[in-house]
Image (cartoon, rainbow, N blue to C red; front, side):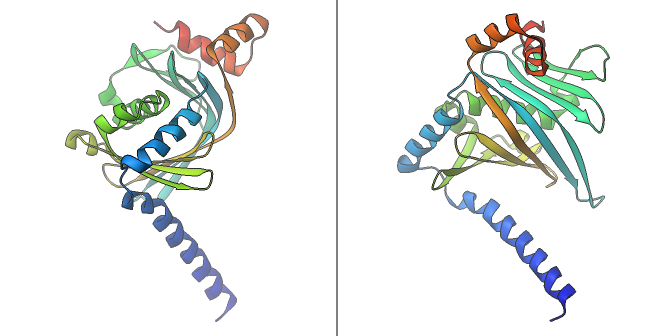
Length: 230
C-alpha cells in the first residue's frame, strides 16, 4: 500500500474510531449502580462555585461541508450564571443569568434576547447550568442520561426528553475527569458543535469577591458583568 493510501486509511480509521467512542456512551443508560458514580462525578466537577478558563468552539455545517472555529474565555458561576466571551474571529459576549439571555457585539451595549433568537445556545446553557447544579435528579427529569467511566475519565450522554427540545438539540456528550473538559452537541439537523475547555481554574464565590477588591482582570470583569447584569 502506498504511503498516501496508508495515511488516508489511518486518518479514516481514527475518525471512525473517535465517532464510535463518542457514541458508545449511549449504550450505557444510567442505572442504580452507575447513578452513584454519576452523582460522585458531578459533585467533583461542581465542587467550586466558579469555573473559568478558555474555550475553542468548532461548529460543523454538513450542508456546507465546512467547520467554523471560534475561541475565547468562559465563566460558569453556580450563583450568577454562564458567560461565553468570544475573542476570535469576532468579539462577542453571550450570557445566561437568572434574568434571561444577554448578548453583546464588540463593545456595543448589552442587549437581552429571547431564547428563540439563539435556541441552541439557550438549551445548551440550561443544560450546563443543570450539570453544574450537581443535581442528578434534575438532569434525569429533563434528559435520558447515559454514563460511562474509565479510570478517572467519565463520559455523560444526555438526550432531551421533550420532543420540542430534541428539534433544537438532539444529544449532548460531556467528557472530563475532575473538571468538564469537552462538550459535544448535535443539533436538530445533526450538525456537531464541539466545545473544548482548557486552562481551567476554580474558586469559590467568596474567593472571587475578595479578588474583586484586590485587582481588575479578565475573570473579574466577566464575573462583575454576570453579577451586576439586571
